[in-house]
Image 1 (tube, rainbow, N blue to C red):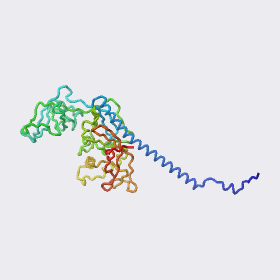
Image 2: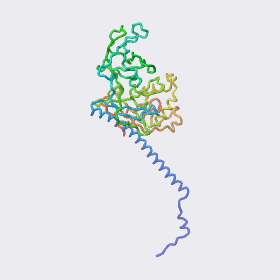
Image 3: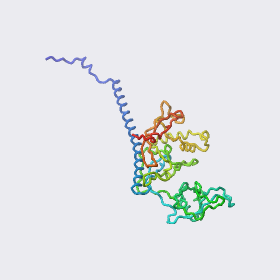
Image 4: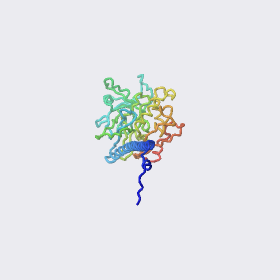
Length: 387
């Protein structure tokens, strides 16, 4: 047997990686690591949003189940985030509030027409003035138990409810024996249109706000919000058009009846779409959009926030497409657009009480591709569930 001795040339050919080869390997490893981190981060964000949507769906379904089981209305109240004040981050179970007066006997009021000059000739045929003596409405308003939009039943037990305006009850001064509420829509039985007083000694009940049930509120995952400007919600929940603070109602309540359907003010909406998204997306895009608004150019010279409120009350819900760019969005172009993170819709069908989770339709073709979804609720309304 012959052995081939190692030669110097053979030894010299056995060498390690060159510096270039080593840098290529390191570059490939860094690329793979970056892709892995991005993929894990994206999946975690997607799970976070879809998990929050499922959490809201389960909470609403829980209220519906309680209403059916306990044979009494039960509901969910949504709470605005203290920082992102145009979004919700918490919710709690509620039950209907009491009716005022709390005694078994209903209160009594007189129903009148406006007579601002006091000449005993009504200024309008509409009966909109509810005058009460010693009814305790000043105390109720001071405690936040009646607000604009609270409901009054006249006569008591008739199931005829009217929204009220409390502006004539001034809680900055001591109460007076006589207090006045204004009906937001005229009383349905006006009687003699030539008389200031339409009815005396009429019975009434005021529906007080819902009560929180003794259970810890449910908090959405950190970094996820229910964006109210991308949601289709009852108008009564939204700020007033001339509300400089842009404050949403503290009573954003969805009630279910013992039959499982939605009742109360939320039922009038028919469909309620709740837009669940990333908190940074919600604030970053919205802040820049509102800052770009020229109220005078939009026919509303009051303020950018008022103009924005008018926009989202109409067909233009604030739901961006998957990629957003435009002159109003600083730092992003059509070549390098803002990439919107995962989002979901939680939809409540008022007639049946069914609650579903769906993806949004991000298609942006109309209006020359303005960066916002044309018909974001389409998948929810045709029944395409989320993955």
